[in-house]
Length: 131
Image 1 (cartoon, rainbow, N blue to C red):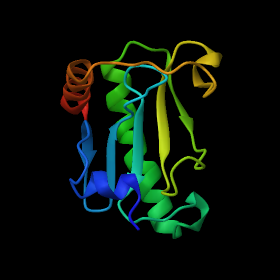
Image 2 (image 1 turned 30 degrees about the vertical axis):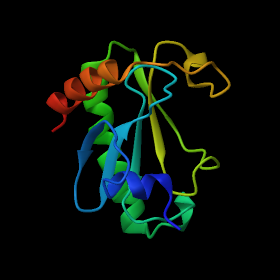
Image 3 (image 1 turned 90 degrees about the vertical axis):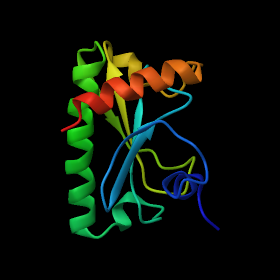
Image 4 (image 1 turned 90 degrees about the horizontal axis):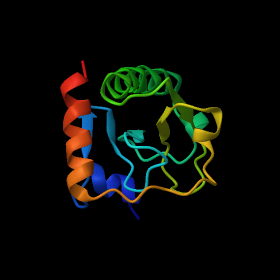
């Protein structure tokens, strides 16, 4: 059975896409810790990040770096935090979260509830800065 992320990649579930190539996909988290919180995934449905082949893992990190640079240019923040938890969806994913304080990357913090319009605007801004 496909994960929710595979369904997003396949266009079965809508998302606010940031970027994609043949192997990787990035989209906004709809319940973000901060505006611009982005998920980066391999298109291959592999549950655990350390089960990825070395070249796929390396490529995922390089793709995530490009996405992080675009988020950083688009969202006022001090840094982009990176988290790999992997318990909530059985599909490898990297969280990229704009940070201004160390506590901003705490997943116990309340999530934001942005409107679809706000998410669309943020996604468009990040896409403009993706290179």
